[in-house]
Structures are given as structure tokens and as C-alpha cells.
Image 1 (cartoon, rainbow, N blue to C red):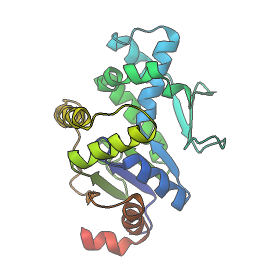
Image 2: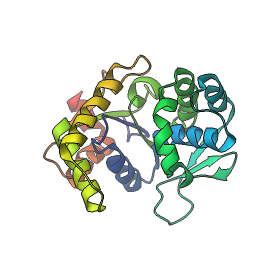
Image 3: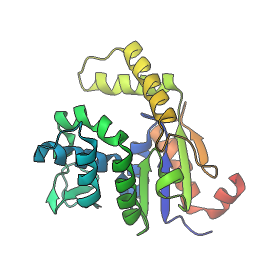
Amino acid sequence: MAIAQIIAIDGPAASGKSTLGQRLAQALGYLYFDTGVMYRAITWLALHDGVPIGDEAAVTTLAENVPVEVRPPSQSDGRGYDVLVNEQDITWEIRRLEVDANVSPVSAYAGVRKALSAQQRRIGLRGQVVMVGRDIGTVVLPEADLKVYLDASAEERARRRYEELSARGQFADYTEILAAMRKRDQIDSTRAVAPLCAAEDAIRVNSDGLDADQVLAVVKALALDPESRKSIE
């Protein structure tokens, strides 16, 4: 084994995947690819083009026919990557509230997931990529050199989300966040298409009690040191 060229990071919501993925990619000089942005891009496109979000066939057609490109960041405005549709930069457009409100049903459509998984593979197989999601090691890139399943208890993940919202000055209720977190876990792990689960050969990393620096150190060592991966396997 050599230094990992394709790295897949999966795990439940708020486990710290995005933070880990972005920092690991920066440390390695790789592309950071949060696959959730593709579902946001198709959601934005449907809204922009007036395609009803509830029309599964029409939304799926968009995903099948419109290429979404994810590239290293071209601007120093806080972005971790560029997201382009038809060569239009929509990196910040996909963070609009109306996209937030509509992305869940889009990401649940089987045809959309199939189409975007193919697009994700196209980018991931170029190598030198850290890809983050919920089905990367199991569906999108089962041949990844390093598969990490980043986990944390629901209580820990709810606490982190509570502190994140509170730090922004937004109202947050820990009990409500925890209940929503558990509901999201149940939906993600039992859905018919690409349910959340760890790949058989994934290395599980539990981030309970670890800060972002400690998690990064563990996974960076796995990426750079083939022997450490072999000893765990």
C-alpha cells in the first residue's frame, strides 16, 4: 500500500466529517469534496428552472443530464471548493435558505442518487481527493484506498450542533436537536437507497472526547502511513 490517493469519509450527521475532510484535504493538498453539494446543486437548479421539487421524474432528469463540477477553490472567500453547473459558479447560491428547505426530498430520490453517484465517481477516480458523505465507501467509491467511518454518539453530536448554533447567536434547544438527530439517524440508516452504514473494510474512528486536531491527527496518520492501515485491518 502507498499513500492514500482516494479517501472516503462516511458517518452520521454532525459527526465532524466536513471539518475532518476539509482539514485533511488541506493538509494533503487534495480536493475536498463534500458530496452533499451535488444534491444542493440539483435542488438549486430545479428551483431556478421552475421544476417542481415534488416531480421526481423531472428532478431526476436534471441530475442525469446536467453535469455538476466540483473543483479546488478559485477564490479566497471562505469556500472550500467551487461548485459549477453549466460552468456557472453557484458555490454560495446552494447555501440559500430555499435550498436548505428542499434538498432532503431531492437527495432521497433513487434516480437522483444513482445519477449523482456516477458524477461523484467521475471526480473521485481522478485521485488526490477526500470525499465526504454517507455512502462513499459503500456505493460511490468502494475501491477507495482509505475508508474512514467517523462516528460519535447522538448526545455528543447534538451537543456540538447546539454549541455551533449558540455561537452564531441563533436560538437552540438541546432536547429538540437531540430528537432531530436521532430521527435523522433512523431515516439515514433505514432508507431503501444507499442506507448509512460502514463499509466492511472501513476503519471506524469514534470522535467522542476528541477535538478536531486529535481526529485529524489520527486520520492523517492513516492516510500517510500504509503500515498503520495494515495493522488496523
